[in-house]
Amino acid sequence: MNNLTYETALAELESIVANLEKGDLEISQLTPQLRRAQQLLAYCNDNLTKVENDVNSILSENNDHE
Image (tube, rainbow, N blue to C red; front, side, top):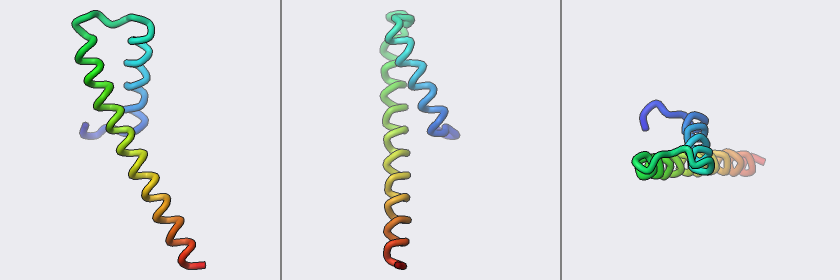
């Protein structure tokens, strides 16, 4: 998932979900799209976890300086 931003991954994931909900996917597309959605979800979760850890670290540093 090189050169993929969180926002791009989320938009692609939302598009896949919308297609699934509307029933716009052919049977032959279902499995690859579900796999892609799983990859995108993991990527987004990893990014959110990293940002959360970074924010907590910054907040902890600020509290240590007070």
